[in-house]
Image (cartoon, rainbow, N blue to C red):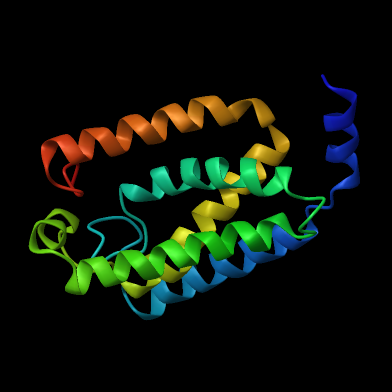
Length: 161
C-alpha cells in the first residue's frame, strides 16, 4: 500500500462522519416509527429506494475527487455533501417543472425524507467507504455507469420497483 495513502488514513479522523451517520439514522428511525413511513419502497413514499444503492456509488465517486482536493479544502465530507445537495436541488427542479420526458422518466417527486436524509446518509457511507477502501473507486464508478445507462435505456428511473 502507498505510504502517503497509509499516512492519510491514520491522520484522518472519522468522528464527524460517525456523528453525522448516527444522527441521520436516529432521525430515520424516528420518522419511520412516528410518521409510519416505510423504510424501503417507491421513492415517492419511502425513506430508501432503489437509487439509495446508486447514492453510495455516487458518494464514492464524488468523494474520490473531494478527498484529492484536501490540500485546498480542509473538509472533504462537507464538500461532498454540498455537491450532493446541489444535485438534489437540481433533481427536484427537474422532477417538478422540467421537460415532460424527464418528469415522466423520474416518475414523481421523492419523499422529503428520501431526498434530505437517506440520500445524504448514503453519500456519507460512500465517503467512508472510499476513505477506508480506496480501491473501491473503480468498481463503484462501473456500477454507477451501468445502473444509470440501464435506467436510461428502459426509460423509467424506478424500473426495479
